[in-house]
Length: 501
Image (cartoon, rainbow, N blue to C red; front, side, top):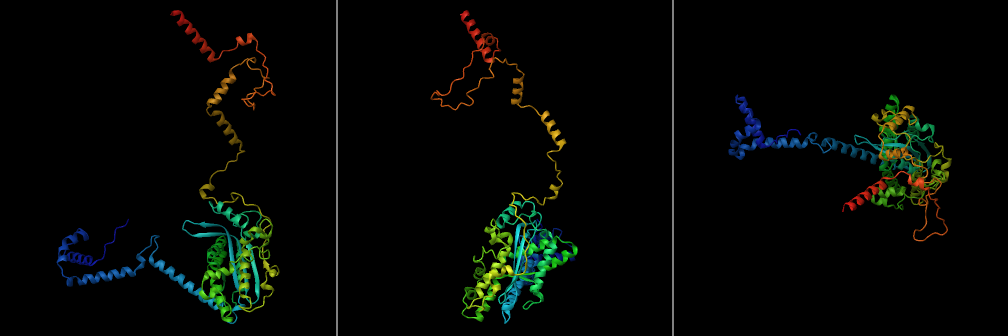
């Protein structure tokens, strides 16, 4: 721990002045501030209030400077108060900028004919790195562009194969795959272009440039804007950044700039702006989102379950019989059903007063020109993904095949040289003893091994095995056991004691 900073009180400035005066006279105080406080402390106590005024003034000025200097004050995480305030100021400025842009975008005579883009990114895992940053590894991206007057314009869906998952996140990847039924990263069923991150980014930003750049309502500061829920901002930003980081130098610099410049705004505030404009055009439009300006009420418009299981809105991959139960988690389904739920809310006689056209109906989705790659087949997620990013110290670990002849030879040598257990020694001794064949006939079955009869009742249906008595000579000449020999010795001792008494 560093040395504690001396409190700059009025007494502090008095002692400091005394130390400078003594040093100028050639009598410096060798013990520092502590020694000087003992030496001149009595003089301070004898001073009147008026005499202390200059030092009190200096102390107040120093205290005010410390309060205003936030760079010298830090939070528990080591961040200065100045950095915290600056980040809060930037966040507030960005919030005001977003609200101003959405207010201008959704108002005016041509507001109903302006394009809006919804975006959704499904991810395989959420990686938490050492610096605390959260990175979402993308697996499916969907975008849809529409306007209230003309309806759905186009949409784009793509899959992203990250090939691997971070080490330690395999179980989370399996859980996510079970929720979306999208194959695990590295699965062979992904299309070939799912690994071409440059082409995916080129199509995404080409889609944005074509539909909204330089269009009505979009200025130079808002050339590329998408709308989503607040909880989906991080997956979109980090998912695109993850692909940009995989590119080479020039492409990396280019797409990193585009990802950073992309504006990702709140879909709730967009719906509030649309509702306010609808209320201006038609006062009969009644919605609690307009009355109370509640973002949760605005989100409820697009969170209805009306189109969750609509085949028309879902990608071909999630429309099969075994995967349709998870089609509500399809990224394409999510963005398209939000579009049509907005149409149901605003394209009605008591709102924008438009008649629904073909592009306002879900039946028309299949006729819209789009780019939607298809996964060839689906392999059920395994317990552990095939490809996992291993740490460097684990990559250097040598791999040995079980069929290696040297390994087999070393294993056999190890078996020969290992010490024998007591059971093995007992079995070896029993094998060395030559037991006469007359002791236990080989053709006699031991009925107690497989006997399932009730011991309380004799079973008349089963005949007892008839053992032929062994020959007397062979029985008398057989080797005696240890118990038999001990009994013989005990009998001889008893006879000897009887004769003595």
